[in-house]
Length: 109
Length: 115
Image (tube, rainbow over all chains, first blue to last red; front, top):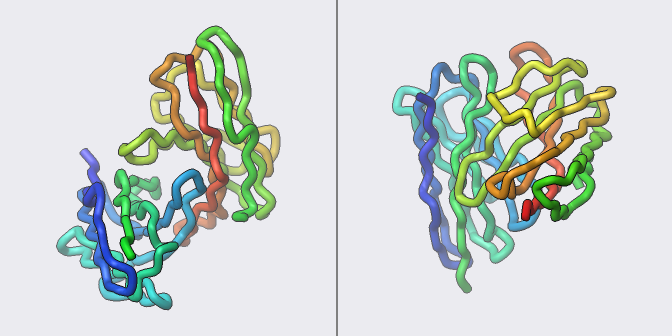
């Protein structure tokens, strides 16, 4: 079966750094996406990785290791507005998105 | 504002009612999706329409019936639902171009409660 694993919930402090991990087992791989979803709102696209390595976008970075079936989202200089759920999704061999259940990130002052 | 709108935002219905959810995308995309999002569960893909033809139906019960009259509009018709169908229903769109990467843009969702 296909599976995406991420922690259910994480807590971090404003101004700090947090790393959200995602491991996957899918039939094929055609890219990995990270989305952010604030409570009661639509998921919004954060990043895309298809090759191994780190992609940096401002305060957010995403890393991929295809051989390990592993990715992480790194958030720096945390702000209160970063409190949200972070969804990991993998595009499989049929180009269908397989979603994780999301990680709820709580930022404390 | 992602360019994908959904109505209504909230819906409460009885098990014998018939209602419809509407989605409209203003992005010129050629693919649209219906997802079900339940608490603490992964997004469940229900239907995919590409170029207005349904290409995916992930074993969704027949009490959910999609309709895609054109590339900008998508409906989900609901009838004789069950309480376990209560969830957030999300619509998304993307531009499908062969094997190219294509992020999905989501609407704000319809929060459905079945009594």
